[in-house]
Amino acid sequence: AQKITQTQPGMFVQEKEAVTLDCTYDTSDPSYGLFWYKQPSSGEMIFLIYQGSYDQQNATEGRYSLNFQKARKSANLVISASQLGDSAMYFCAMREGVQGGSEKLVFGKGTKLTVNP
Amino acid sequence: ETGVTQSPTHLIKTRGQQVTLRCSSQSGHNTVSWYQQALGQGPQFIFQYYREEENGRGNFPPRFSGLQFPNYSSELNVNALELDDSALYLCASSWGGGQGAFFGQGTRLTVV
Image 1 (cartoon, chains in turn red, blue):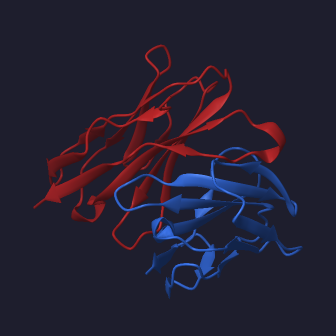
Image 2: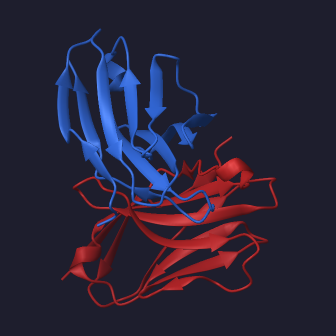
């Protein structure tokens, strides 16, 4: 069963506007972590933000915030004040449990974000 | 920059050959994972090494194997290459705390 779903293959946003990238997940493990990564055309996966399943508050990192709705099993990424350099692929990922240092991540198929000037 | 470096950056191999990809982990990280990313897809977990032992494996055949060295650098070996092995191979290192892994720039493997 697909564990991470990103329903938006592509998104467009005007420079300086905010954009929300959707992510839903499926797990029966009470302990999990949710991540967002940015992948520019160069290929490197750049860590953006992390949300633990027991965290009470939504995670924020600069212009990035994660809208975590546990009951809906959603973890949407919000990028405020978009910049041209934000154009890239964005991946949502989940880690289940924390057994023995496990860092296995399950990724969605990604959303391609294009920021227009 | 994450401090995770991979070599080579690009590689072309012939079907049936063997390949070794290398990864140098970020200082202080004792866990390394390898992922395969086919074109247009998200990365797929191959396996993970924690303190030099494999402690997790994805749905990949045994011809995908790996090593982690005492300095926590790592290798991914693929035997009997197939055309479908053409992909971006990503190495990720972490300290095992479960709060995220840091990726290298990847090795783009083309099998012809």
